Amino acid sequence: MTMELSMTIAIVAAAAIGQFFTALVITLFVLVAEVLEGLTVGRGRKAIRDLLEFLPSEVSVRRTGSIRTISAAELNVGDAILVAPGGRIPVDGAVLSGNSFVDESRITGESMPVEKIEGAAVFAGSINQSGGLEVRAERIGRDTSYGKIIEAVERAERSRAPVQRLADRMAGYLVYFALGSAVLTYLITQNINSTISVIIVAGACGIAAGTPLAILGGIGRSARLGAIIKGGVHLETLGKVDTVVLDKTGTLTFGRPEVQALVAAPGVSAEDLLDAAAAAELRSEHPLGKAIITHAKAKGRPVAEPEHFAYTPGRGIAARVTGSLILVGNQAWMRENGVAILASLNFGVEAASEVYVARDGALLGAITVADTVRPEAKRAIESLTALGIRTLLLTGDALPVAQAVGRSLGIKEIEASLLPEDKLARIQALILEKRTVAMVGDGVNDAPALAEASVGIAMGSGTDVAQESADIVLLGNDLVCLVETLKVARRTRRIIWQNFAGTLAIDAIGIGLAAVGILNPLMAAFIHVASEMAFILNSARLLPRKVGADDGGAPSTPFGVQPAAVYP
Image 1 (spheres, one colour):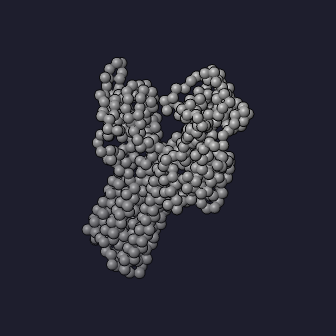
Image 2 (spheres, helix red, strand yellow):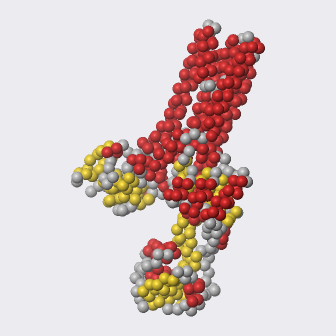
Image 3 (cartoon, rainbow, N blue to C red):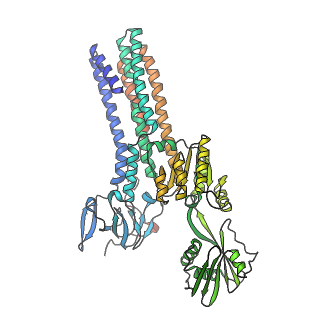
């Protein structure tokens, strides 16, 4: 039974006893409430649609040698699209020509503009800032990264969380309770006005309409933060999370090794050490070797081509460069080749891989290489702790490395050298302890744990398997976004339960006052509509602001760069 039926009974009853004005006013109040509900829910859905409408409706393309303006719906894969400074990029693709800084914060979460040159990848929904670009369309419309974000949010909007089903059941129970109270009131008082007032004052529309609106607002606001929640049930569960389990590589760290320090032996320059190591590693496919090459190129060092190259697994490299034998590898590799390791070398980097370098039997020094911790990770962990959330680090990496990363971030519970099945078992054990567990990971090895956790959260840069197994995807790989999304989820639950408690309290008090004749039908109708409006507006606080409202006009250019001429 619905609240509309109970209000219909009240209106008919009022008219039947000659209270036509009362029946008219009740009808008017109900219509006002319905209109408000429709407008508010419509605003929530429009906020989701506006995400897609953020893309330009018309674009300039180069076809058959001329530039034409066409509708975005007419775009084809392979089109060359011209994007002026301040314009929004409508497709996923690659830069054909031009140079500019692009704001990708809506897609990747990167706060700083990213420089784009010929061949660079660009994403739909990002904003071109300082120069004209010509972009080849590779994915258009719903196939773009931005389009997939919208589809995920729309699917989530259509899903129903358990709390929504509870709200619907409670609304039905309240209708039965109101009608039962009305019958009891009439049997005791024989007063038709009091009976009608009892039916009118009971309102469950606030929770019936306010609950899905709150879920919609929470999902939309999370999407604006860069977190795609795949359903209302996951938003609700996230709001109950009391334990967050984090993977290390690719989650707390960037997942790519970088040179941390050059520790040269006495009488050897850091440049000489780096040049020798880079030349020896030039043909290497080892991640540590690639990190050394990248560092050398970033420093502008010339990298000589080795005349001979040999790799020994688990040991290192022997390469001949300009007539000299260069050895690069671990301590065992140095000892096997008669190179003495100096105890005086001070690395100053905890839990980093040490790559030793020798030339013609003499030690040149060592290069420390380590994965880099995400700069926002410490702040995110501190925020989670402040929220009363228990944090654990589970990783397949070695214990010294895990402890170094964990201690630097303030994580006290650290477990290392874990296989995927070990992570899965640990998640299961936490759930058996009645914990509500969020698992954050990015790799294939995290997929079983992501699927088993109360709510699985994948990094946007993670593998497809991890993202498919997860319930939430962090597009920008920003752990602070995780904290903010968790706050949104908690706020959503809090608002829903405020609506529940408020509805029950107002109904109980209102029915009591109406039954004893203190409330007449007009006052009862006013209380009904006012409370319903209050609860709907309470839920509406979660709705995201209109897209573009905070753009403030044309985007600024980075570092004070003035917009260049658009096209030659």
